[in-house]
Image (cartoon, rainbow, N blue to C red; front, side, top):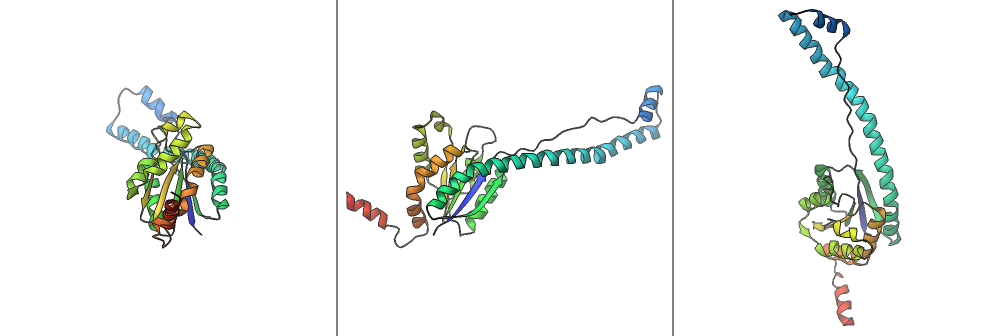
Length: 231
C-alpha cells in the first residue's frame, strides 16, 4: 500500500482595517484656543497620542483583523474541502492511503517549509499541491516547490498540460511543476477542482511505477521489461 499526502494550497489573505485617530475634546479645545504651548503641554500631547497609537489602536485593529482573518480562513477551508473530495476519492479508489491534508495561505516560506519537512519525514511517497500555479502575483507554489526539490520531473507537468490543452486553451497558463525530494514525488495541480482531478487522472497510471523507482524496489524494472516484450 502506498502512503499519499495531499497538500492543499488556497489563497487566504489577511484583511486589515484602520480606525481614525481623534484627539480628546478637552485637549482639542485647548489646542484651538491657545496660540502657544509650553514645553510641558507639548510633551503631554505627544505622550497622549503616542499612548493611543501604541495601545488603543492596535487593540482595535487586532480584534477586527482576527475576526476577518478567521472568516477568510474558514471560507478557504470550505473551498479546499470541496475541491479535495474529488481528488481523495480517486486516490482511495486505487486502494492507496491519504495520510495528511493541510490548507495553508499563499506564503512562499510556509509552502516551502511544509513541503520540505513532509518530504524529509521519509514516509510519504507522493505530495500533491493544488492551487497557486497561475499568473497572479501571489501564485508562487511552483517557485516554492522548485526551491526544495532535488531533481525535476518535467515529463509529468508536460503530460498534464498536454492533455488539459485538449480541454481548454487556458491550460497553457499553468506554471505547475513536478519534482523529487529524496524519495518523495511532489506534483503541482491547478486550483480548479475540475482541472486538478483531470490532471490526477493523467498521472495515475504511472504513479505506482514512479514510486517503485523512487523506493528502489526490486521489481521496479518489471514494467519496463513488459513494455519491451510487447515491441
